[in-house]
Image 1 (cartoon, rainbow, N blue to C red):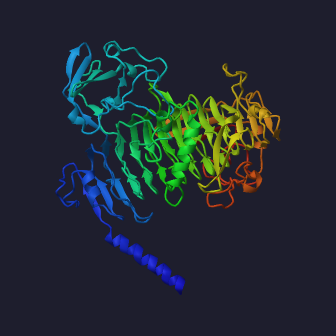
Image 2 (tube, rainbow, N blue to C red):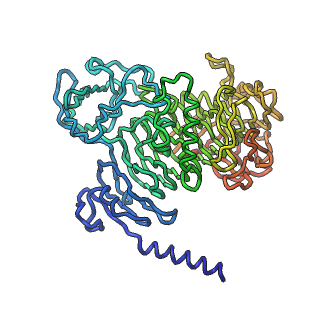
Image 3 (cartoon, one colour):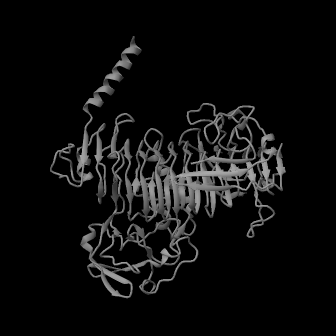
Length: 635
């Protein structure tokens, strides 16, 4: 009876919250002096922010909204959120930019505009430069602002001469676009911008400049359980998001818990699209600030930040547990999604991320389609990631992390980079098609049922001490270095380059790199094609050096198809169904390869969600294939 009364009370509270929940409407045709009803909507989202309480919804109707949305309160739980959504079926744009249509022609194809600094309020992106720990400005200044012509960003130059006479960049895909250039200067109380628009008259086209450092970002912690659904978000003057700094993208969770970011199109950020990172109080580019101390490197500074974050309440009860799903993210010059410690216990799934770090005007060690530090018990699954420098970069403290069922290709550095992690982490059922598939200076990984058509590289890191945790928590157990090894490779397919090697390293695809591992490794039941080389430690490997699977990918609208060939060897290579018992424990943390809740993990589904059985459990990410020429819809 007591149990029944308890559940009745919960049901009553839930129903009460539904009855009291309100919906506020926002329309460009509305008024901030209205009541926010469907008939009398507010004009700005920022006005609706002041009225929304847990359980309420803010519905934004079609139009372009140029404002910084700074939530002042969040929800109370998963069932009592504050929801920000685009009205169903309506296009709602949130922009960090303003329109500029007062350009003057200076000669040729170059125009200039003089803007009073008061126009920018308390933040001028054309007097603020991109900077931060692990940032490489490549010998010049980069401002956080951008200039856009009909939605396409121009290329900032370091001097006016390169605007007057632009020279195309040769090392990028957008060679022609790189001749659309701009330059800025501060002159007295004004900002002057020159831009080469070629044949276009900027006063007759849509020309915008970034004016806000973010679009959706609470400026304080304690704003939990927010949903952001269905918006087109772009053109913010975002700053470099180092892991030792406050990380502010166009959507930023700050130091909060339980956000859902879904069904959005997020693009054209100076640095990052979505950030799930740390806040400012525990450190703000601490390595750069301490640059005069030659005996303290970035490693030490990040360890110090880690312990400050722990003292600031970093644990599952208060931080992380976000969901980022079904978003399209592109044209960001640092990351599509990043997060230092704030991404722990989260799910990042079914996102399409591409054209990250495409302009290549600056570089640094924090760039990737997804770049996470401390992705503790984080799931990264079913994403499509391509045309980035690095696809997924898991840097420090990937423990309990699972990277599963992603299609990653056309990245020119590597598909997955695992840096100084001690495990356990799992990489399963992925399709990795770039020339470099996996680079790891980590231990304690399990690589299962992947299709790997690029290099696998492994090396130790004896000079950096990095943390590991008690299982499924943020409680630090200790710190140690990376010796190399303690990895598991079961039931993968490796595809080589024929007889060709990479000229810079002489390395061939496959697992030869593990012949040099210092710790034990566990390698079994893999399949090698087209000169991919197995390790001497490989058990029950099958190989056909002459067979070329002829892997190709084909785009049809929003869909993606994978084409490849197999031979009878493929159907012959069957291994065990992998589970927690087979994987054992990662050596350093002494932790099992299990689910975040501590229950047993079994790799019993393939890339497409089909059930694996003893009879169909072949190598690679697919089961139930037939014939020798395969076509599979992978997105």
